[in-house]
Length: 256
Image (cartoon, rainbow, N blue to C red; front, side, top):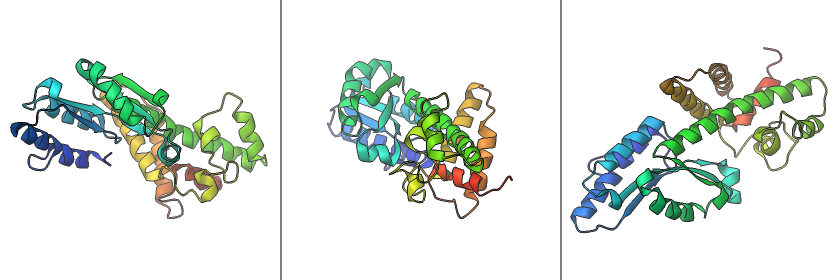
């Protein structure tokens, strides 16, 4: 699970030290066992497709090397609970043979019901980017709504209870509420520590915006959400905190 496109390109594609170069070198030395190469990081789609293209162009037969993307969702809380979700992209030619192996391996970190074969190589990454795009926007939207309630003098816990059985329910309100004290064992109740950092949230939102541009899909909410995150990140009080700290940023902004 690598942190960014530049690192992915170096680790997989370096002609001297890269994984794909090592796989080819092993084959030249007689090691012809099937190699499964899996990347679980959240990486730009074009980078994943570039790695897959190189993997497909190696000297190994197609049935001896399979590259899959399997980005993960669930964050630190999901990792601790063993409930991570994996979105897998695998070539149709290899999926029947390889996906059961991938699913068996990933089941050690997540529920088998949360491991999805999303399509060809790159599809898993697209699924993950779209999921993160929505999650980032709902983090801001839920924080705005709850902040309105708090400013109006409403009980945030009762407001959350009502939202969670009504049309406004979302993962943020039900699983990682941004208002301190509403839920136990979530980042907002421990100083916004230990969750999905706001910088990473902004990064993956940017990936979603880029994917939308690449496929010609119109976006309306990406830019204002990115602007809000950028303003919060620029303030040392919120920098490095869980993304739901955007609630605190709103709450302390006093009508700006």
